[in-house]
Image (cartoon, rainbow, N blue to C red):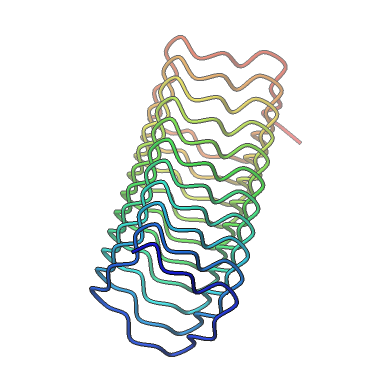
Length: 212
């Protein structure tokens, strides 16, 4: 803990179960590294390269991962509550069952990412790119998804109660059986989206577009 590893080259390194809380790993190269079950709470990983890294079951609560590259990384079952992932690249990453409550993912790239069963309550995903992402059964209650791109995303059975989706793009998205009670969808684009059996009680759809 408290170690300084900024700019370090740790690609392909084996760091599973390592204790790196409060460590400084900004700009570090950790591509293909194994960090499963590692403790990285409060660590600084901004601008770090973590593509194809294994971070399953890792503890990253309150960690800073802004501008980090996490494409194709495995973060399943990881704890990322209150983590900062703004502007991070998470395309094709696996975040299934991950805990991301209160995390900041604004402007992050999550296209084709797997977030099924993930907990994203109170998370900030404004302006994030989530096209073709899988968010089935995810918990997004009270999350901010304003201006987010969710085209072709799968949100079936997701919980989006009280979520903000104003100005979001949801064209061709699947929202079947999703819970959108009290959600704000004002000015959202829902052309060709599937809302079969979705719950929209008390949701706001003012100025939303439901057709091309």
